[in-house]
Length: 443
Image (cartoon, rainbow, N blue to C red; front, side, top):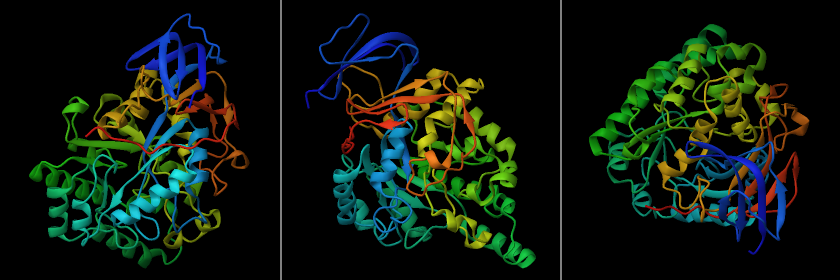
């Protein structure tokens, strides 16, 4: 790789500082950050634009292998790039579930040929695969996914002895989906008895209740404290769960949390207009939860943003409540949603870089990514904070062809995305085919 690119006169947002500068890319990495740079390579005019580190999404479902009628690694990684996401970590609930190291390697092989963004994959957990978990290579595997709530296939871990073994022995960060299954099942029966098949979608936030979330999250935190585990709780959705976390410096935490884009942007009030399109697990809850989650992201109680990007065929999302799958595509709009929070005064630009890139790289100990530093890989996104755009399904890059943000107008736009130094996306167009690299970890 010998491509040289100079981004001139941009405003760099990085590590708590916003400053005008030039940035030189050589051999895929950031060669120099300074003013007045010159180059014989490609020159990109960054005047009027802000340059941020590329978004790192630690929670996606790209549906390959086995569920490719909904999406695949190629299609969804392209959608990621269109939204400024340059690295992703994919979850194990595919077909077959990623419960062995051999199956994990098969996903790596698929991504090595098809992923346009940088990638890593989680190992899944079950009540029976502790030997596979012990064999995980922490230099390559981003983390271990534990479903402590309802899941598909053989991925639900509900045996107390299995849970204790996982929290005691996992060689990588444990990431948990926390909802209490018996509580959910009881609520489903209650609402089915009352409504039959016609359960209103707005009941989702009561069926997948705040109590079910808190009970399961508390259980995970208690286990982590008992075994001094390295725990990260995914997609926190309630204000009550915030009491489980701390604002201490991220580097000092063994227990961290994230909030996902749907829970930041939507509230239960939106079920009336969006319906089952925003049915996801854990459920989108009340307006006061949304406000509390935003505040916690600002304060550091919640450490960063993810998507839980989970595309479904649109026809399936029109089914009756109990037959309607949970999940929605959102990775194309991660940064745009966060920048809308900046416009609304809920975050600063410096916060935006911290919660979409810096903190994910720090928490997972990703090597040479997540910051705009000389010597680091040039995973970058140029944004135009003054160019409005309206989301339309027909413009979506998702394989499933729809977005829960259809019709929403945002104040900012993605002006360009760079993956490993290659300028791959510019103002709505893919300009170069790229191949992502497997993420490496300093552990």
